[in-house]
Image 1: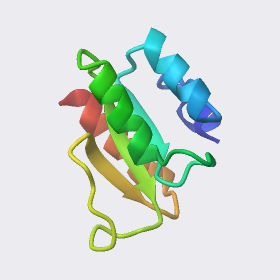
Image 2 (image 1 turned 180 degrees about the vertical axis):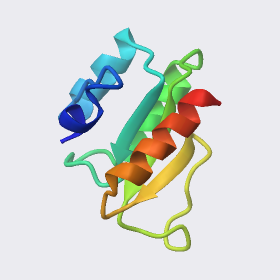
Image 3 (image 1 turned 90 degrees about the horizontal axis):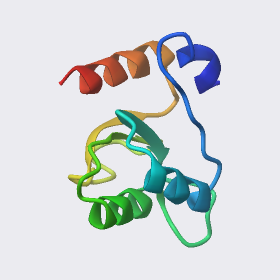
Length: 104
């Protein structure tokens, strides 16, 4: 879905699990990253992964958007995230969020 929608405007890389995500960010420093709070991993949440990456690679400049079904009142958004996107995913709103954080 993301490659089809954003592929004309951005280089889009997709990781499918925590191991791929961590390996990708060891070698890359993308402008923006989207991660779901409830990734399908028995050991980590999306929040855990971004915190781990930010601690292990402080030079990383990637700006992360947390995707979640929870509202801001239900879930405290950690400082490691510059924004959050409440589900259901609205591509136009998400596109504007990505443009906004990349342009900062």
